[in-house]
Length: 537
Image 1 (cartoon, rainbow, N blue to C red):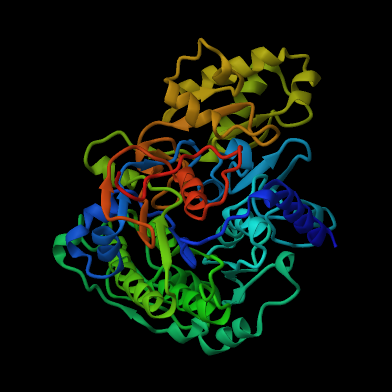
Image 2 (cartoon, rainbow, N blue to C red):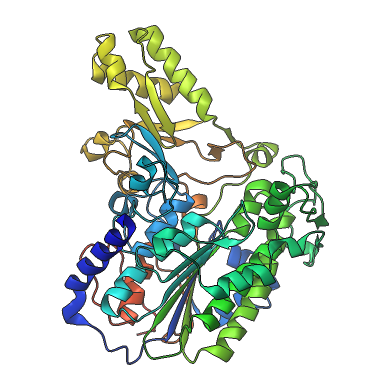
């Protein structure tokens, strides 16, 4: 009942806002396909441009590529990135500040797509409850309830955040069952065709599949096996990689998700959805949202300069080409948007070999450092000084300060100084300082951090690493305000789009207003993005 009420409230509110300006859709595409390729850094399309022969070649030569697209928030993670690109607002508005966040009011750590009400009842329900601004599909269905909105992704948070509150079908790959599942928030059961698909195309059919390199040696930046890379699940660092059998389900599914078969299946399922859900069959525009996260799973293990990542995108190019050919034969008029949720930092150990200052920051070590400093300087309370540290937010405990009669401002100021000494940290600042005219940061740095601040979910202190330092033990990581993490591709292709290469600076939040303008849907006042030119003047 709670989830039904939430969806009705969203639908009713948006309907009242947009009811008097319903568009005619006379020149709109019948199907919009928004594809987000997880961890596809903005330089990748040009980096391997001469090797594309499929879908990426078609998008780059026939589509409109915006080559200077950067996120304007600092915490470049999967949840905030997808929420930003699909709502046209920043984390400070849509509230998805991190993949998991500490909520100061409840003193609990929440997953970004957990339904908090159900959580308090001890039930497990995934939902877009924390998404505070409407997604693109919500706006489309508010003006045209008969429009179909389908969201399919490897990751649950990607499928849910892109699908929004009123999607007709939301599917993701369940890493426990090895099948494509959904949430009861969107309905009590999945359609019969999805159950059939799960039976006919199980992930297990890929066991023992061998991944052999298909690209030219000129694609590769490094040797096949280097010390700083991770390993393929159940295997090693060197091609060929073989998917293990399913006797160890966990290892098999990890290998599946960071290999080309995961890309094959997400597009195969998308094609089935177009047919089964009747997407693009009438004059009412439909929306298909695809989250392709296999490159992210692989990138965290091998890094952006590995042969594995080059081969993964070579496979993506081929499969995307097949998908576009499928749309050609199925949908009369369609529009494709290709982008990403974030970039990625090169592997620190690789950069160290090049004699650059790079390294890793361990969250638990920083918590211990701050805790010990505070205890020595101010005293030992009954409760910890540090409530939580979910980068970039450090939450301190006011009750601890009260117990030892410490001045809160002195506590904050002391931690700021200590963190500024910590190797690998470039900045420690309070959210309040961002509003101060005397703040020493550059205007764009203040904007990046300010766009991440959401009351109750942002810490007392915000921390940023030095360039090429990462908060993670995984081989490669993202999450900072540096260009390598904020830089993503943005390409439009299809109906209403003129071929071109645009170098003007833009942001992923421009996607929603651009598509709404194309659909002749009025732009809500809360959007922060701009309408991008899909035609030359």
